[in-house]
Length: 157
Image 1 (cartoon, rainbow, N blue to C red):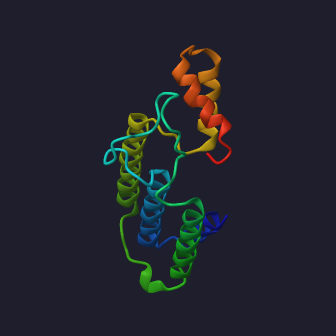
Image 2: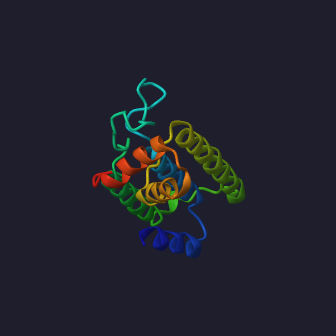
């Protein structure tokens, strides 16, 4: 809700594009931390379980959810306060900032999604439950079902 209020404020003031760009980059950085595992599977050998014999480890985030929302809230409030001071309104050609920001978002999220697919981790509960249902329906592989069932039976995951 605060982000919408901030967007309306920037729209009606018709300025503060550098502040908005900085806010967008910071929120993108928070999102990357939120989607990343606390321990990078590239650096650690065991990895996530792929068979029923391996130990189940729930997904732990690099940036916990509460810290993610709290940092995002503080950033939006800070950016909102900055819009009340005219010396933060630097003249820039905003379409270039928008294109560069969208390019950064696409490249960064593409890299994150590749990492998730490579190491077979799903950071959200909704996607994890959809995978459990898909694995139970028709794969027919024992190991896939065992891992999927461990996701479904663990209340903390």
